[in-house]
Length: 64
Picture 1 (cartoon, rainbow, N blue to C red):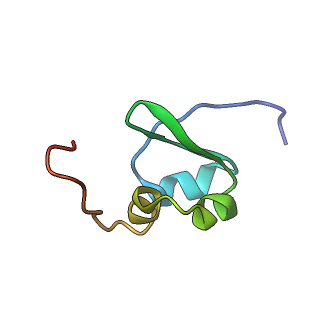
Picture 2: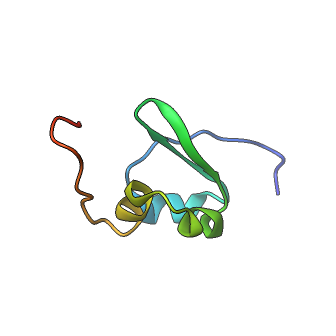
């Protein structure tokens, strides 16, 4: 509406839903996904699904 872009960094999914129409996920230092909420919920990356649903995702031993 205002023609303005804001960059907000958060781990709070509810807050992000309230303020953002486009969101991005950074995994291992790279942008793993960027787009609308519908696009992110449709993304096949298990770590994105786990984060959006606030569930831990098993990783290989040694992964941070």
